[in-house]
Image (cartoon, rainbow over the protein chains, first blue to last red):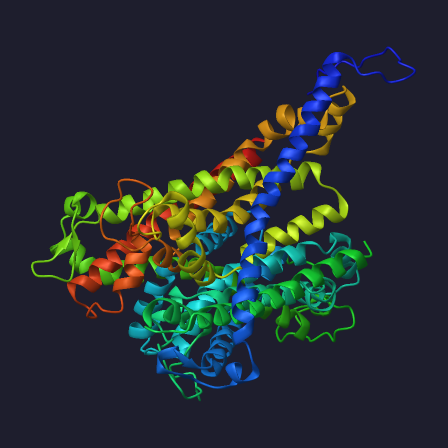
Length: 301
Length: 321
C-alpha cells in the first residue's frame, strides 16, 4: 500500500468517468446484495420466534408453569423441569463464576506473554470448542463415576460448569482489558499493591463485565441438553429437588423428550416448552445486550 | 512485575535477626503484601484450571475407552467397517456410516453457512453504520442464542414438512434438514469471527485506498478481504468445529439412520448423535459403553486439531505483523 501515488490534478466538480460510474454502480448493487443475504440469515431467526409464539403461546398459562408434568409430559405442566433447570444453572454458575473470574483476572492482570499463558489460552479455546457430547462423556467418567457424585444435580452442574468456564473467562477478560492502563498506573503510583489495584480500581471500573459473563453462562447452561442427559437430568420427576444429590428434570431435556420420546403428546406442548426455554434465554440475552450498550454509552474514557 | 512498593500507610514490622534498622524499615511485607501474594496464587490457579480441565477431559475419556481400544478393537474396522451394530451379537463396530453421515451433514451445513456468514460479516463490518449495524448485530446474536434443542424441534416440526413438500421426498428428516439447521446454527459464529477479522485490518489501509478514489467495494475486495483472509479461514474452521460437534439438533433433524447416506435426501447418523442416542442404553463398563468413549475420544482429537489449526492461522498472522 505504501507505493500509492497521489494524484495532483485538481478537479473542481466531481464528474465520474465511465469507469468510475461503473464501479459505483457495482458497489451499489453489491451493497444491496450483501444486505439481502444478511437479512436472509436473519429471517430464520424471526421466523422461528414467530412460529414458537404462534404455536406455543396458546398453551402458555400460569398453570402450565406451576404444575408438574404428567403422563411423561403429555399432560400437566413443566414446573419441576423449570425448577430443575434453575438448580442446574445455579450450580453451574456457583462453580464456573469464581473459577472463571479468577482465571480472567490472572490472564488480564498478571500473565506475561510466556508459554504458560499461551497454553492457558489454547486450553480455553479448546475447552470452548469441545463438542457438548464429549463434555457429557467427561461428566459421566469424572463426576458420576470417578468422584462418585452419582447421577445428581452436582454432577450435571459440574459438567455444565466445565463447559461454560471459557465463556466466563473470555467475557470477563475482555471487560477487564477495557479498563485503561493509566488507571492501574495511577493506582500503583500511590503505592497500592497489585491486588488492591484490581479490587478497588480494575474490577469496579470493568462495569458489568462479570455480570455479562454470568448472563452468558445462564443462557448457555439453560439451553444445553447433551451434557446433562447422562449426568443428572431425568426423564420425569414430579418432586422438586431438595439437595445437590437429587436428580432433577430440566427444561431442555424435557423439550427433547416431549418432542421425540413420548407418544401422543398434544401438538402444542413441544412449542409451549420451546417458547418457555427461548423466552428464558432471550430475556437473559437482552439484559446482557442492554448492559453492553449502556456501558458503551456511559464510558468516560 | 511484582516489585512495586506496597501501601505507604502500612505499619512496618521489624524482622528478628541482625538486620540493620534501615533494612527493616524498607521491608514492606505487611498484610497487604501477604494478601497480594495469596491473591496472585489463587488467580493463577484459576488460570491453570483451564489446562487441568482440558487434560482431564482427555484422560478420563481415554481411560474409559482405553482397555477396549487396546485389547479388542480393530481400528481398521472402526474407521472403515460399514456396519455399526454394537448391541447385537456378535457386535460390529464399523463407524464408517457415522463418519460419512458427519461429513455429509457438515459439508451441507458449511455450504449454507459460509456464504451467508461471510456476506453478513462484510455487510455488518464494512457497509452498515450506526443504528442499522447495532440492530443487525443483535439479530445475529439472537440467532446464536437459540438453544440447540429448540433448533431440533424446528427441524422436526417445521423443516420436515417443508422439505417433504418442496422436494417430494418421503421422509423429511435427512442430511439436508440437519445441514440447514446446522448451517443456521454455525452461521452466526462464523459471521462474528469473520467480522472480527475484518475489524482487525487497520483503517489506514482503507483510507489509503479510498484516497485514491476506490469505491467502498473496491476497498473491500482488493484491500480488506486479502488482509483478513487468515482470520476468515479461521472463522470457517471454527464453524466446522461447531457443526461437527453439535449433538441434539442433529440427532433430532437427521433421522438418525445408521447407514452411510448416498444423497442429501437420505437420513443419516453422526458420531455425536450416536453417542447421545446409545450412551443411555449401553451397560456401564461394557464393550458398547467403551466403544462410545472411543468415538468421544475421536471427536475430541478432531476438534482439538481444528481449534489448534485455527489458533495457529490467526496467531501466525499476528506474529508476521
